[in-house]
Amino acid sequence: MPVRVTLGIDLACRAPHVASLADDQGRLVWTGRTFQSRVRDLEALWADLGCDPGELTVVMEPTRNAWAPVAAWFKSRGVKVVLVPTTQSADLRAYYSKHTKNDRLDSALLARLPLLHPEGLRPHTGDGPADPLRRATKQRSSVVKRRAAVFARIDALLELLGPGWYEELGTEYGNASLHLLARYGDPRTLLRLGRARLGQFLIRYSHGQWRHDKAEHLLAVAHESIALWDGAGMDFAQLGADLAVEAEQALVFTAQIRGLDERIAGLYRQADPLQIARTAPGVGPVLAAAITARLGDPHRFTSLAAIRSYSGLVPKVTQSGQTGQSEHRGGITKAGDTLLRQSLWMAADMARRADPQLAAHYVRLMNAGRHHDTAICHVATTLLTRIAACLRAGQPYVIRDVDGTAITEADGRRIVKEHHQVDPAVRAKNASRRNPQRLKHRTSRVPQKSLSASTSRPVTTHPTSRPAA
Image (tube, rainbow, N blue to C red; front, side, top):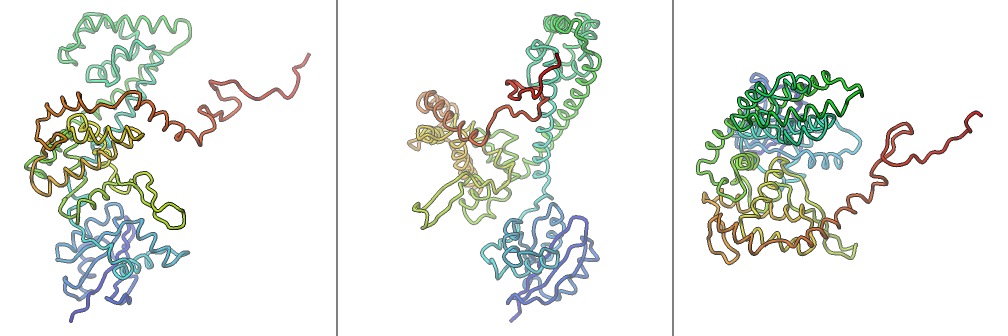
């Protein structure tokens, strides 16, 4: 009978990987073998193993993206590949050797993992970071956050010019607003442009939505900014240069998001040909692609409960017979994919407005004293379960009334608006309960870092000497 062996690999991003081989009894056959993610190194390692692919299990941690090519190489040869969460291996390492951590020990631990934690070994499926849709959705999320940071800096700079600027330009900063700030952030330059040329500029970059009347408003705002700083020494040229830098960055990010949206749309059609995720209420093209990409193959999970656990939206559970309380449920674990969790939260907040069953669930939680965020997390978990069940069955999402009757999305929105609304007094009461919990560890809303720092509250220090007479 062939002996099954386990190859534990401690991966490195730049340095060589370290591998150890253990038999089915946990005895180390050899340890400390180094190699890199090169074909000749992998083939030499394969030759040293000298076993049938069905007898070998490769165990590794998902170290950044270094694991993907190694896992793909072994999987192409029919080997079972297992990815172990880093937190799990770290806990086992602490038990195995508390005061020592090195690559040889890590690889030996991974090679013995089938004996230490057999129920935690689940075969790896999918392409991980090699999946283009998974990468593209993550990249889009990152670019959107960076653009939001640029918008916040533009807000801060426009505050120096007075409230009229962001009243006229808004807070979303579309194409016309960004081009205007990139060229004419200096109000004096804007005034020199004049009404006619400014109107043509706005018509061009807003595609006709802004015209000469908008130009008149912007010129009035520019006059007001100059009057506001009259004689105070504001360097409008330097402020305009700062606005131009931020606006140009935002334009680049906006173009990148537009290009990513086109790529993601094509990749999503390949990943979900039936557009099943799009049939769920509150799930648009962006969220459908993100949920599909970050969830991966729903059939790789043993159950829908495993999918909920993967999302990190399930509560932490502590059971003990010593505390007098048999079970305690804390906040959500946040152990899963961050982008998946964020996408589900946004989708759930919109889905509860169209699905009466989700809306009724949300209202029950709010009436029970839950905060809005907590209630949405519960709804997101239910929504994920339904989407995953539809993907596994290959069937579209069907919106139903609380009695189980299938309805359209328009009917669902009407029913929710008429029968499943939270009393504003209940919402305000739940929010007021949450705020003291958030602030209980904070001694001051405006910490005074130094005696010379500006502060919105009186300085509590007193002079230590009398002024000279």
